Length: 229
Ligand code: CTP
Ligand code: MG
Image (cartoon, rainbow, N blue to C red; front, top):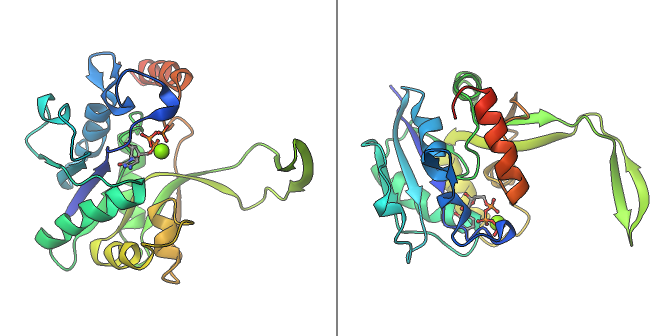
């Protein structure tokens, strides 16, 4: 029986948020973004444990009231990819051959249980793994010097979200191999470099990544609408 682990990169500084602390530690109602994102993964009973990767100098994570099934790893790196790679080295050391990993941003606190369940159900059946994503609905323009250079064909374009779900062995191999690639901005991109094609699983536009102060207000509205404020 395979085990499922969670890995939450939370070693960023949140520069675009311009707050007095890294954005994962900002409050959304009674909990921080990080606590909410952790709870989102643990909401599915199939998730055995969640590992949180924080910066080596972080002294806030340890003060949070995190659930028992959580472990903090002071293994953050200079980039998100590096933080995930470092965290995965630890998880790989304790996981079994057939175990799987869900990688989820600390900055996505609005993930709903039904989306996570769909990812685990559908992605977990696929040897290539999978990720939550939403099809683009806006018309897309390519810019050159402030003007439209081209209207990009929208059909078939998706916005990648997290969680992303892979066999730990596969993701480990992908991240070690893509260590010097600057184009791998999510786990799926690293896995694609192995020649694999992760499954796109339709998520919800409400699973936003909180980046700016405006997103914080949007996340509040979403959580209230979900009855989770
Ligand atoms: N992250 C990380 N290690 C880094 C950079 C980012 O673990 N060196 C994490 C963030 O903490 C966040 C997730 O990756 O949970 C997504 O990154 P992003 O939204 O870009 O967060 P920040 O990098 O903190 O924000 P900014 O880019 O505005 O500085
Ligand atoms: Mg960033």
